[in-house]
Image (cartoon, rainbow, N blue to C red; front, top):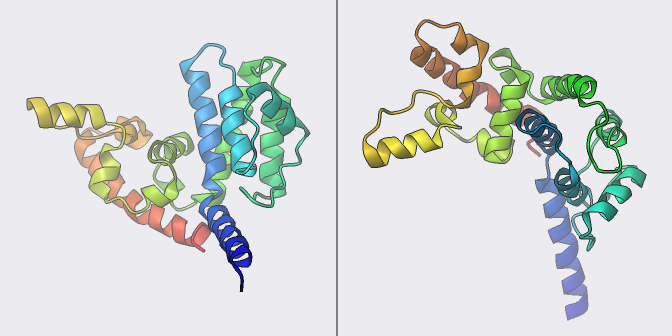
Length: 224
């Protein structure tokens, strides 16, 4: 075997490993971040989100112009051979979002579309995180997954860490200045905690359940 053949084999193996590393939770992260943008800004444009999405499907593309990337995504069937692989249902969700962007990459009539995006995220969470959905609302699950960069990073974390995801600034202030230690992060906004008299105790119980259910979801839907 000559050097050229060895290089080709190594490139092929590297591409296969990259493809395996791109999980479908990326679609959940995408829609979560879109909804976060709509919550944070009055009329956001999504060129940056389109660029992130494009390179999930085409990780070896040399395109850099965001407007061109947006146009390429509009034409694409989203059937990737080297990047993220998704099914027809997920393709329809992404196409719905892309087709409802105007020429400035902003949503047309964001109120009604936002409601549809909420439903899409809920369907994706139900599809991939049915165990964890028993304990936490879809949007909050999406935020947890997006915050740590994916389910591979989240399912390994202990309950004590899951409980405090999103409270990093308060935790640093506690460590540096002796401020009171935070009791919860993003999960504080769960209905279960909001309705609880003892929020700290409920947060611990919820994090313990999530630490187990997230592992179940990962090994049932993502491990390969």
